[in-house]
Amino acid sequence: MTAVVEETVQEAAGGGKAPGRPGPDPAAALRTSLPVANFLSFFAIAAVEFAVPFVAVSTLGASSLVVAALGICRFAPQVLLARTAALLVERYDQRSVMLGSELLRVLAFLLSALALAAGPAWGTVVFCLANVALACGSVLTSVSTQVLVPAVFPDRELPRIYARLSMAESGADGLAPFVTGVGLGLLGVPWTFATAAALALCACALLVRIPRIRVPAGPEAPGKGEETTEKTETTESTESTEKRSPGRTTLRHGLRLNLATPALRILTFWALAYNFGQCVIEALLLIVLLDQTPLTAVGFGVIRSCVVLFAVAGSGLAERLPARLRTGLGTSVFGCGAVASYALVGFGAYLGGTAGLVLVLAGFVLDEFCSGVVAVRVQTFRARAIAQEDRAIATASYRAANLTAVPVGFALGGLAGLFLSPVHTLVTVGALMLLPAVLVLSRSVRETG
Image 1 (cartoon, rainbow, N blue to C red):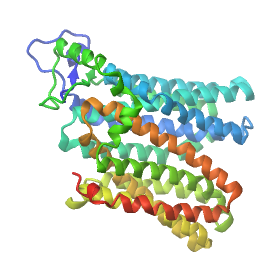
Image 2 (image 1 turned 90 degrees about the vertical axis):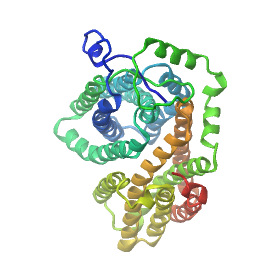
Image 3 (image 1 turned 120 degrees about the vertical axis):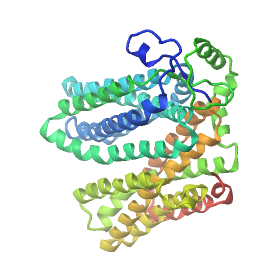
Image 4 (image 1 turned 45 degrees about the horizontal axis):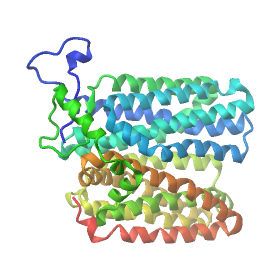
């Protein structure tokens, strides 16, 4: 699919278009700026996700119900607005979409900085509004990135680009909680959130330098990666988007796309099972570990921060593994490892003591490393398996389904902890996650490219 570049470098700087000169290379502009912007953006997001519940509880005296409301405001808009995000990504150029999503984050961070000044009651409302803005920005960025990358970069570069983006996200997620905790202690709440807003503005400064790239929602065309500045092509792509059948822009259609082939069906089910099972376990795990093992709160925080480094390592090594593991076989093996790791976590929690804690730590390490590898492999496969004209709605539906699995998993885990033994629930759910682990080893996944 040919990505349409709507302006040349000279036009972006305020000058006139130079006749006969080629437009900017969007791949060159994005190759470095997108991963760096991704790191800054996810660092700021992780900082706020860590700080908002902490400040709400420690400073505003929020109850568990308020913490749940904050979580709903963070995830529910991403499900409800998934179709709208897909339509916006198809209608507007990707620079505008990504800049808009970053500005929503800036708004979220500024609202968070002002929350304490509003008092306990209104401060909680402001935090909820900030989380809604953060959620809207997240769904726009996710859909835009999954549409933009395969449209701009040649097929052979997709694994490398997805690896860089995954490393940036994992690195930010691992570093941000520690830095944010230090920031809250040294700078205070308002300045910590203001710093997060400044980081998001830095991401905007990187994104504003890239050309305006519109991804046509029409049939695949030869010459993917070639650029054109013809106004007629831009108009035609817009008309193509507007004339699409309404049925092809629904989340139901997007879900059908994610179930179109055996490999897509299995990987979609695998992702849903992974998110659901992980959240059921997360709802109970800390309670069980504190009761069954010599774990302290500080130790748990250090463990969770350190194991994220294995996700960074997995993303970085995804395309440096032996050739056979850089295919569908690698997707199967590491996808199996990611979900099977929770059987190890559940057994470790059941065993208890120091030995059990070591098994839990091993399960975390296995999960993070395998997740880092398989994230690159799955994104690459989906970029190749789903047609360009369907990619926005397919990505939006895939994300909506997985984000729905998150609160459902937490809710069922919380209820199970009230009525059932938390330890036995952990072991049972961990064992059940061996089913998608076996399924992802199927031949249809192993034989994908």
